[in-house]
Length: 428
Length: 166
Image 1 (cartoon, one colour):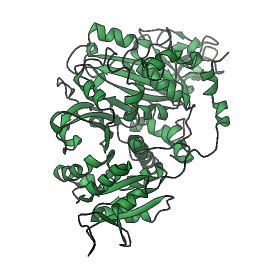
Image 2 (tube, chains in turn blue, orange):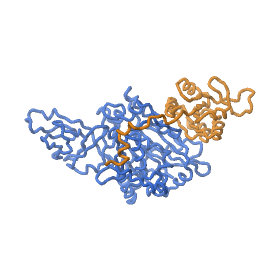
Image 3 (cartoon, rainbow over the protein chains, first blue to last red):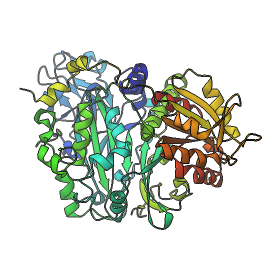
Image 4 (cartoon, rainbow over the protein chains, first blue to last red):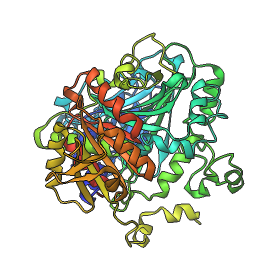
């Protein structure tokens, strides 16, 4: 349970809100690089942290993320002409560069200098690992570029997708660190999904459906360990990483790729669910990439030309009661991503946390809220930068590992929890 | 026409959610397993809670039978049997300092297993503890806990109790 004022503090991320300020401390994934495939390509509407923006790539290949609306009379610059190093509004010809600086106001004499007095709000937009990242905070506190391993490995080793989720970011993110739901909601997928099946770790999962959990604070957020019995009195651990504010990384299986998410607020009632899969030491196979593109594993198949899932609230998520009855899927919804999203969206745009009844196994969620509240308070009251900004907080991995029974997993998996180039992930 | 899922998850529909209480309180025993964690539990006991009993693990009181760590005491020192306290609880929270003597965890854990009472173990002061100290405490807590939390700061315990509606 959270008090309403605590829930509001964590869920509201628009301009001027404490949590909005916290999100504006980080580089955030804004678009897939493929959304702006070439110079002078069509601009793309982007809404992030409750701000309507427009992304574009100019004649020289520079990326820009600017206020969507023309400073003249409020026309959407999505209609603009992308030409000669700027976006030109088709209404009266006002033109802007990637920094939002107005370059030309045709109706005014050039010598008047009027264009120089017009500047739209803009944010930096940089490509890294096939993702366009933006920083929406104060320029003087802009951190170094992100260093997540999935964007630093060679392109052939990584795959990223995104989808719209029609719920607040927090309830989506909390699903990502709620390890105890996997044994129910996703139980049908471990042995069938091409991106999971065949791993020895699956046998531990399926032979022990009542894992015991351990939550440990990490420098950037949390380690959430799920423990199951292994051979000779040892424990099989699956360790999830959560890095503030909304990065999660799930423990790998066998030689499959490693995967995880970002949950980025679009506004207070919708978020982007970013999903990545990568392998630290090998290229993804054609079959793996095809499966990811087809919505397998943690990815989701979207309506063509959009990032809206094919199964969505408008078609009742293609609920299949027969599959639910036979157990082919536990909830009746197909695919891990939509199994999660359908239930999280069913909570309503922002779930009422004053009515929830948490239990012991929800300590990952409770601790994440505790750390977020502590960090946002420190940021707002004392200007302390929140965890998760530093490169060493981002160079992390999840791990699946077998350890002696009395060993702290943080100690036993110490090396496995750090991303190291050309070193294989700890996986069972 | 919108699907049922689309209509029912809209903001407008939120006002029709049933507002009646959906749970009753869970009696919770919070038990300090060592001297260092007793300080934390004493501090917690001064806060307002609805369904909390604050206890500490106790060496066998003089003349008590049987011996073997089957006793706890309230914070004023009044002893009671572990099984009686567990019988009166819906959930038990064990608080231990990293490296502290958490010997009573086994007795309490056994009593909880008998009554199918959920146990959560919280290790406080972990940031200052060595790995070997932490190992010793974990070895005593893990067999008896559904959830173990290793927190860097003591204030987490109060937040967790509030989240669990204690």
